[in-house]
Structure formats: structure tokens, C-alpha cells
Length: 194
Ligand SMILES: [Fe+2]
Ligand SMILES: [Fe+2]
Image (cartoon, rainbow, N blue to C red; front, side, top):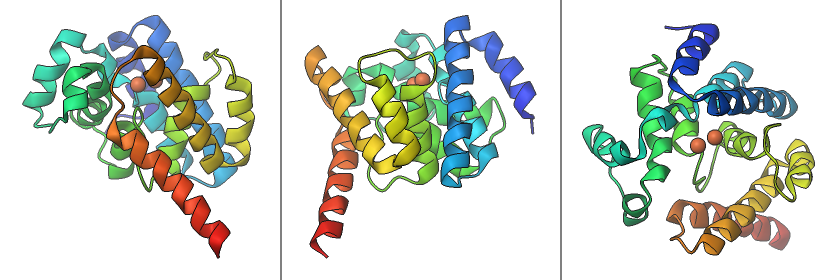
């Protein structure tokens, strides 16, 4: 089993400088959120570091590599293979970096689309990817402060942001993002009805 520094060293050789710096930013932001919300810091730190490890795979190799790992794809992933870097990241984290913790692997697998009924670790990695210090987009500071106060409110804002982006680009929406957003909205409604 590699320690964090060994993982970071290996990852730095696979990713571009820019993407490696992003990964360190996600790892640090995930630590901050983990401290804030009582999530295991080591899980957050490692999941954040490795979340984009499959970005090293050239885009024309994503489909064949995913098929080789036995990843079952839906049509949206088939049309936008870049989405596969998330589930493939979980496969590589296990195979290349020796990560066995299923919670870490799942957080990596869901970091791009989100999904229904996420654990706090999964929410933290999804959000850290959005708000790490290297990110700069309109509304990022609002999302940063929201994330430190309320994970679910920040998740909803992040889903909205990413759906706007996907609609703007005119590409299909991944069903897991819709499920994740609906889940939070319906959960909130149920609490209000009680
Ligand atoms: Fe990613
Ligand atoms: Fe990322």
C-alpha cells in the first residue's frame, strides 16, 4: 500500500502540471471540508488527490479502456467519453495506486456526475473539484462559502451550475446529475412537509 506522498509522486508523473496542481487543490479543499463536516480526513485527502487520475488516459482511449475494465456505459457516457474518467479513475486508483477503500473509490467514481443519496465524503469530493483554489468562474466564491456552511445547499448550487453549463454546450445531461439534484430537492421538500 502506497502512502500519500508515494501516490502524489506517481500521480505527478502521469498528469500534466496543471492537472496535478488541480488535484493537490482538490485534496486540500477536501481536507478543509472534511474537518468542517466530521468526515475522515485521510479518505478525503486521498480521494481528492486521485479523483482525476484517469485524466492521464488520452481521450480516444477512454472508451476501449472502460470496456476493458468492464465498465457498463450508458448512452450519454458513450457519446461523451470524457465522463468515463470518473469511473475509470476508481479502477485506476485500485489497480495502479493500491487503493482498496470502497468509500474512496466510490467518491472518485461519482465526482463528475454526482448522484442520488451521496455520502458526505462523496459530496465533499464533488464540491472540492468545483471550488479548489485554482477554480475561477462567476459565482465560485459564493459556492465556496456555501460549501463550508451547508453541503446539500452547495451540492444543489453546484448541480445547477453544471446543468447550466451542459445546456449551454448543448450536450446530453447525465441521468445521475438529474437524480442527484431531484433527490436533494425532494428530500428538502419532505423535511418542509413534516
Ligand atoms: Fe474530473
Ligand atoms: Fe477534477
